[in-house]
Image (tube, rainbow over all chains, first blue to last red; front, side, top):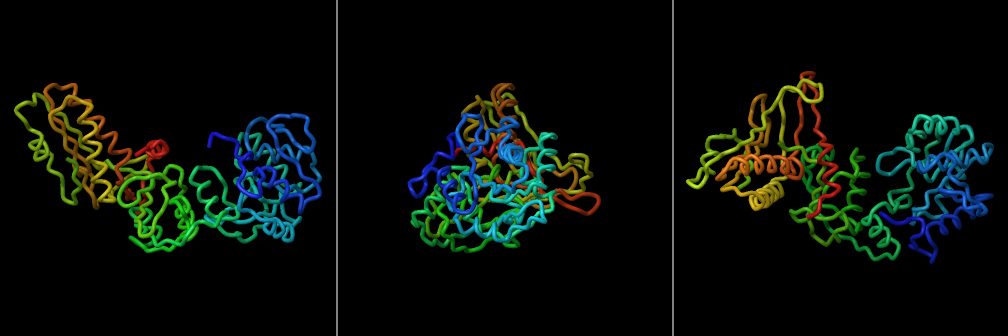
Length: 256
Length: 147
């Protein structure tokens, strides 16, 4: 979003980073923050593999302490509760390479609220050596212990403006239930098996509604690259949904 | 004007629609169903539109591009439904006093229509399978789409 997500204050008067540390302190022996550069601060782990994102942070933690299991947590999960971390730890299986939740929308591993065992380090290193930086792809290859999804919202992150609006509405409980009609065309019509359906939703934007539908039908489509129309014309993903509106999700078009 | 039709397109009729005493040049583009895509043998194509918005967006594109070029008239028809090899899927026609504006406007119209008008196509292959075509250029475009 062009700003540092970890510094956003969304609840409890804490930045996302501070809240993540507080949650982890409830369930872990020690908590470390992954940083880009080594600022010499205590309980930080600087990226040892360059600016390659979360997989580099995981590898750096495993390098710093190869014998411990690491509970890896993204800093931008404002709706996550201590309860989910407790479930993860109670169900941890150290005979697997990792313990993770399945995603609500596609059943794939959620890599950034997961326990990475020491035995996962080899695959992490090997992915980095091949310039592959997707932690989820690494988890898919490993012998992982998958836990049922905690639902759509506990692991929702704040990647876009629409995500933030959706999350804020849930935090301040300002969202109301609305009746929305969703119409489907082309591949979405085939995947959902319907032209149109009335839905009750407490999402406040088409972005939230799309995530609900993605989970409902396990759609193999992501919002990125798609457009959305409300009441017959294009609009933004952060459009405020109202009662009786008609929504159409528009996958990449291919006319001509 | 932008039209959607489920009937075969008659390019001659479209040409006549932009004929004008002030026009000294005419350019057109026809998109045909071809027998291959990304190395696979295609037997037919199915087009499906979100009709209300396709109509609206198609007309917006024609109005915008007509105002950007010195042309006399422009029109476009897109066909929907199940099309066979060689069928015309889309026809764009432009008339103008001079050729440069006609060629340029015609090119801009087809490019814009392919990137934002909500129409999708499903390819049927010789092995009996079928899949919806993903247009990656368009998905890049959508990220910057701003209405």
